[in-house]
Image (cartoon, rainbow, N blue to C red; front, top):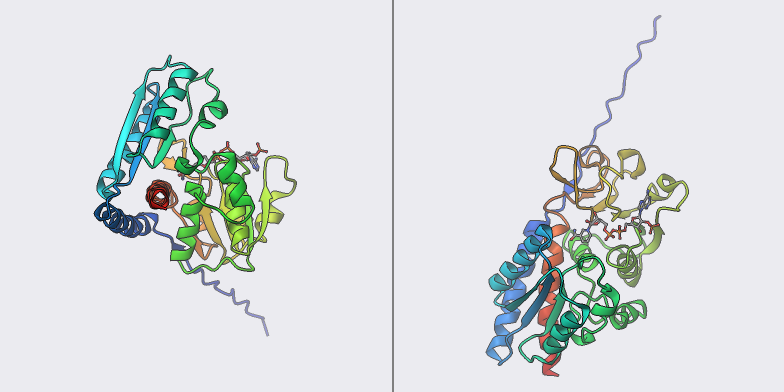
Length: 295
Ligand code: NAP
């Protein structure tokens, strides 16, 4: 009797999309309430942004920050400086903001025009007003496991995980990218929540073997479709930090979203995933700094 081969139909379950816009909106409502309470107790949280030059992308980011502050009831000031501003002039503005009681957070919009020493300039921001958490003092506190200001984008990722009910404790976490702004502090925050963390970078060998182990995979590389479906474990939580322009001119992340969403358990879209959380963390840090100033 002829054998009939029956092809098993594999049922694929699509990943749950983590809605960064909705989570960010809810977080910003909480922040606005806290800002209102602080205002009623006599302290209006204030953020100052210094922007040097006329990079159009930076101008958009700064406008978004201004708008977000306004919506949250946070006072904001933008100091616009010309492309040819000197290091001394920028530092003088930072020093004035350090001494300004209305300002609790200072941010220098990066990148600065070529020729300016970013590290030197940022080092003049008072650590208590370092709402980007870039300064050695804040980086040091984080690595000692007792952070004060949390680095904005990684803190936003942690909020997305928490709000999605994803417990990091004991999970295999893989972070791709080791920048000072995203990768390294991301690894620190996951470690703080007892994840088992591996960090990959451009010299990592057999990267797919490592990413396939991840229960939580965070990618911050800056290359479209860097993470493909064959690099992801079934059911994993995939967080896409990347912001790139695809060949079609549209914004996209580092993850091949369409194919990875068929494998993953959770996934963040780009746009609308991690992006909105970064400014939300900035607002949170500004309010925290204003609260700290009461002590
Ligand atoms: P970055 O400073 O350029 O760092 C990129 C990292 O990726 C580096 O550590 C690099 O390794 C690693 N990398 C590059 N090629 C690799 C490869 N083939 N295999 C493995 N690792 C590789 O970038 P970033 O500032 O961290 O930003 C990363 C992405 O996130 C960008 O798209 C950026 O626009 C985006 N971003 C988004 C937000 C947000 O709010 N959503 C915030 C910040 C950044 P090496 O160290 O070995 O060079």
